[in-house]
Picture 1 (cartoon, rainbow, N blue to C red):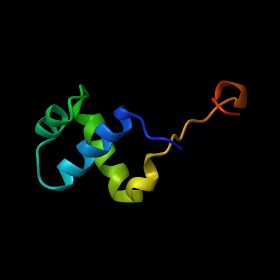
Picture 2: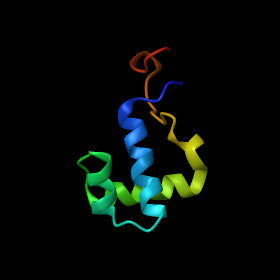
Picture 3: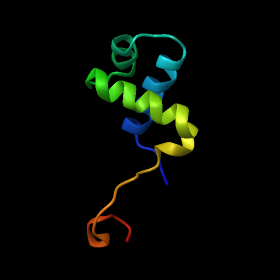
Length: 68
């Protein structure tokens, strides 16, 4: 699965937070806009599953998922 520019930026946020940067600094450096809760959710996702956890976890009807 290809990573988009947005996915790469989200990974950067998670990495920066793991390196000790504040959520606000990490989000600004990545050029994104997101809430504090979302930033910490991304950090937790990176801690729990590494970069493999970044693939789309969308659920729902198969006809609404691209490539189904």
